[in-house]
Amino acid sequence: MKICILIMGLSPCRIELFNRLRKKGIDIIVTEEFGETELDYDFSKGWKIPGFSRRIPKHWKKLTKYDIIISYDVCSAHTWLAFLIAKCYKKQFILWNELWVWPEVNKVKLVKLWMEYIMTNSDGYIAAGTKAKELFMKYKVPNEKISVAYSASEDMNKNSIKKLNIPINIKNKRVILYMSRVVPYKGLDILLNAFKIIKKKRKDCVLLIGGDSNQYNFKAKCISKIIEIDENDIYFIGNIPHDLVASYYNLCDVFVLPSKFIMKDIVPCEAWGVVLNEAMSLGKPIVSTDAVAASFDLIKGNGYIAKEGSAKSLAYGIEKTLKQSKLKGRKSKIIIEDINFDNMVKSFMEAIYNVRRKKI
Image 1 (cartoon, rainbow, N blue to C red):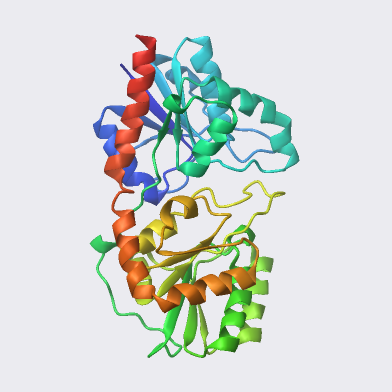
Image 2 (cartoon, helix red, strand yellow; image 1 turned 90 degrees about the horizontal axis):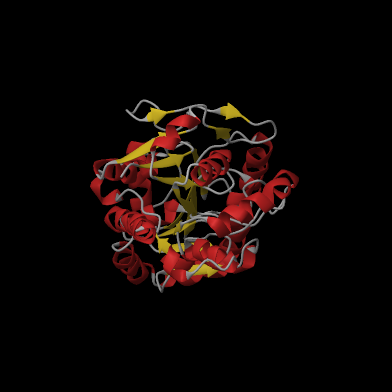
C-alpha cells in the first residue's frame, strides 16, 4: 500500500509532523520551493497557473503509482489535479484542510464549484480543527469520514531561554506580546488601538511587537500609530531569529493574536494560528479573536476570544486576562498537552485506515 501527501511547502512548524509520517512509510511531495528547502524531501516544483499562487506538479504521473493520495488545501491547484488523478486511476483520495471560511475573491469564485465537488466527493477527510470540520459538515460530509488532526507545533520548552536586550523599560511592567507577520489580516493595527485604550486605564503595560512584512504601506501605518501612542511603551522588534523566539514568549504576561476577517483577500482570516500553540507550551495565557480558527479549540479558561476588528473587545480581553495571568497560563500548559504531533499522526493514520477499510 503506497501512500503520499501533497503539500505546498515545508513550513518549519510542520517538519516534525512530516518526519514522523515518513517513518510510517508515507511519501511527502512538495509542490512549492519555500520553507525548509535544504532538507531531503521530494521537491516537485510545478507549473504556474496564471492568476493563482499555487502550482500543479509537473511530475503528475508519479501520483498514479500511489494507492492513497492525501492532498493539503482544497484551494490549491495540486489538490485539484491530485483529486482528478485519483478518480481517473481509481485511487483513494483524502482531503486535508484548514480552510473554514471561503475567500470572496473573483478567482476563487471561478473555481468554487470544482472545489465544492472535491469537498463532497473525497474518500476521506482530515480537518485541522473544529472550524475546518464544521465546513466539511456544512457540505454534508458524514462525521465518520472526518478525522480531526488538531494543528500541533514545536514545544517551546525544548528551547533554551536567553537574556534579551530590550531598549524600553519593562521592569515591574506587564508585558503584552505580538509575534507574527505584519500583514493586514493579522490585525496589528487593531492591537495598537486596543493598547491605546489600555494605556488610558493603566500605566504598567508595555507592548512588544515581533515580526516583519513585505507590505510596507501597512507596516508604515503601524509604525506611525506606535509613534502616536507612546514609543516609550512599545518596542517594534522586527524579525525575530528562531533561537530567540522562546525567550520572547517567556518574557510576556499575555500573548495576543488579534487577526481579523478580510473577505476580499485570498487569505481571509487565520486558518489556524500556530503561534498560540507555541505561547501556550511555555505556560502563557492567550488572547485572540473569533477570526482565528485555533481560538475555538485552544481557549478554554486560559484567555479570551475577542470580537474580530474590535479594539474595545480586544482591550477588554487583554485586561481581563492580565488579572489572572498566572492561573490562566497554567491552564494553557495543561490544554496544549493534548495538541501534539503524536495525536496528529494518529489522526492521519485513522483517516488512512478508514479509507482502506472502505475499499475492502
